[in-house]
Amino acid sequence: MSENIRIAIDAMGGDNAPSAIIEGSLQALKVRSDFELIFVGDEKRIREELKKYSAESKNVRIVHASETIDMSEHPVNAIRSKKDSSLVIGLKMVKNKEADCFMSAGNSGAVLVGGQLIVGRIRGISRPPFASLIPTEKGVSLLLDCGANVDARPEHLLSFARIGSIYMENVMGVANPSVGIVNIGAEEEKGNALVKDTYPLLKQDGVIRFIGSVEARDIPFGGCDVLVCEGFTGNVILKMYEGTASMLLKNIKKSLMSSLTGKIGGLLIKPSLKGLLTTFDATQYGGAPLLGLNGLVVKMHGSSKAKEVKNTVIQCADFTERKINDKIQAYAQTLQGNANNNT
Image (cartoon, rainbow, N blue to C red; front, side, top):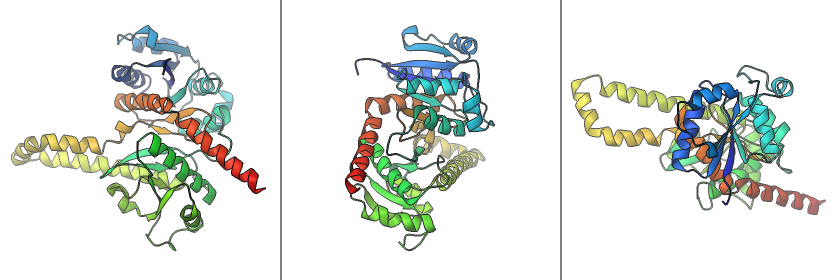
């Protein structure tokens, strides 16, 4: 791109803000420098953090925000009442084309509500989902929705499947990605009402490559490239996935350090163990984009540390560079055209 990608960052959102947010963002500049970091938040606190690093002024800018939306605040009330918050200002920058994307580790509900009310949905996308990459034995799978829509209809899940396929093909380079619906069994007749009503829509769709139902136990083994479900199920899967991986890795380390033999064995397998740890480290994939908005908005974990922030900045740059939003918008326009032709 001829001009630097402008990444607006909620410097005040999250448990470790602003220190981890600024540290991770500046680390991303060491990987690639074709973007501008726009820190949104308390200017005094941001400048105090920046003094710890030698950040080039041409790549770093500050936009002051006098308010912060706390994690516990009601999303709608917070968006309406705190117009000068770092989250609202950052979203408005995307809406007004003053930034190419916005990322935050702040209040998830406020990011969701603000993204839809301020940035706005792409016409034809009624329910933008949070999409998260999760590690598997075969690489990664895209899980959506991860919490944006705890209730959904069959047509929404069909939209998630199509949007997810676009993402995997254009961001992850997966040709003709496979799509599965999260279910309690592999048989077509199994599942709740939502799954049963959605299954035939996915099966008959000519846009995606639907492979059927995927049980939770098959997800870590790479059951398919795109996993579709409503936000309640998706969020439970994501949190359980992260917790289980953390517990297993913690106990592996504990077991190796419990005896002299284990310590010696640990030294011998250290390179392989390091590779295993990297494979199951979800933070390496960045945050969860809210797909289907008129601009890029990415939500990080509230507990994000510098590493996840760094990877999310790079993710935002890649996403913008590959014009994924334009591709989703083109898909939505096709839907609108088909709907008009059918009326």
